[in-house]
Structures are given as structure tokens and as C-alpha cells.
Image 1 (tube, helix red, strand yellow):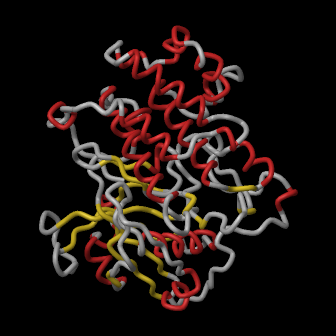
Image 2: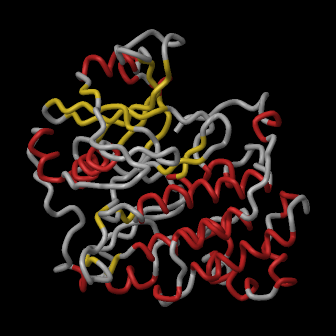
Length: 372
């Protein structure tokens, strides 16, 4: 969880023009009291697919130390922009800490004490994932707030991040069918957020924030940068620029104007990564090919030339018609003018046409599971 994007770098106040912009989650009460903080942030989300306020488990620090074996190095899973993630074990029913191998595995994110922005992101995660449930959002089980210690407890995603499966050396590549189904899962998650009565803009869509379970079902994780969308007749909200370079929509980077169409642009970048197997930004490829979007766009509107961007590791084992259609969809998502981008319902309807059965789990039965 968090910003584990390797070479990708966070966009943060990239221009002084944003100094006076309204800050993300600027209404957050930074008190140590989780109760008062949650009251400040609570928003009513309504959807046929969402549940009302979810009951989160309040863990003590000692319980989580016990679950994660005192946060030892052998429990370490990874590190994000504002927290370190550890593997832990808890009882499936009582959520009490257990010995390794007993109960269920969880991922425990421990906030870095020196991170003030991390505290705001921690509160955002509790607020959004504490109220929303969907099959394509990672489940937040509980939290811990003791003095300066802030932790979050999530369901454990056995296959780790999409980023690892696309870019990590030595990792067996995922098939075309699985890539398509991952894109559909992500689209379902974003469509759910965008269709809530109070829209939620995810704001940090990238491969490292897309996690995969044992069956390669994809879920959105890390809601630290999420925020509510515009209300009434407003078309956007104004906020400081945060996120990850290479994925952020151009109008957002240039003006600080954020809307659900900003997520659509980021989704287009993820589609390109799934098609090409290339990172959104890759300093090692030289100036002409450093930006995946800049490199790929000239190929996308030509069905024959488009095949040149396909990941060679797929060894031609993909549907040409499906790849061409998804490339055309990516081009629509990457339009400079956000008004010309499709909405997520339209994106989802297009992608669902290409859903295919997959035997990826069988193919990976001897492949070691990865955590987040």
C-alpha cells in the first residue's frame, strides 16, 4: 500500500501557482482522537452496492505488535509513501492476534511518525474504507490510534500488486486474459466510486495501488489521496497537486482542477501499461520513450501500427481485435480535454465485451504468493 511505485515520483506542489489552492482533505481535524477526526470527515455515501457505516475493529498497539511479531524484519511486506506494511495473523472471528499459521493473514500498515501528511492520509483511509464496501476495493478491517502510533489493518492480498507482476524481474508474466479481467475489475471499482451520491475521486490510480488476490481478482487500495468530487453544478474541485507523475491528468497538473475525469485519464495510463508491459515513466528508455503516453499515443489510432506497442512477453498470445479495441479505449481516456473522455460506466461497458475465462490460478499454483 502507499507509494511503492519504484521510479515513479510523487507530484507535490509542482508549481507555486498552487500555493493558495484548497488542500486535499483540508477539513481534517488532526487531533489524536479518532472519534473527533472521523466526525469531521464523515460523509454520507449512498449506493445500491455500498453498505452504511462499516464497523471497524479498534485494535490496541500491543495487539498489532503481537499479530505482526513485534514488527520484525521477517514480517516486513513493503513500504509506501507514508507507512511501512507488515504481515500479521489474527483470529477470523474475534480479530484477536494469533500465532503465525493460525487464523487469517492481514496486512498492517504502520504510519511513519514524522509524516504529517501521512496522518491526513491515514484519516482519509479510515473515513473512506470505513464507510464503503465493494468487491473491487480492498477491505479495511480496523485501525489503531494510540498517541503518535497510527496503524491500519487490511485484508491480505496474496498476489501483491499489479506493478510487481508487470515490471518486477523474475516474476512470471500474467496472461492476456488476466490483464483484461484486471482492467475490468479496476473499472468496476472506479465506477462504484464515481456513481456514489457523493462522488469519490480516487486520485492515485497506478499499478502499485492495484492489488491482486489469490485468484487474480483486482482491488483498489490506498485511499489516502481520495477526496469527494464536486457538488451541485460545479465541474471540478480545486486542490493542491498530489499523486504520481506519469499518471496524473494534464489539466490537474496544470491547474489543480480535479474531477472524476482525472481518474479516467489515469485509467488510460494503466490500460497502456497492461497492453505494453512498460512503466508510465521509465528514465532508462531515453527522452523519446521516457513517457509511456507520449510514446504510445501516435500508434493508438492505427489498428496495424498499434500492435507495435504490445508486450513482447505475451508472445503474440492475445486477441488482436480485443487489443485494438482496448487501445482505442485508452486513447479516448487520454484525451487532453477532460470533456472528451468517456465516463467510467462507458469504459466498463466497452471492457466487459472482452472479458474471457482464465485459468491463471492453475498456471500459478506453484508460484509463490506475494503480499503487499
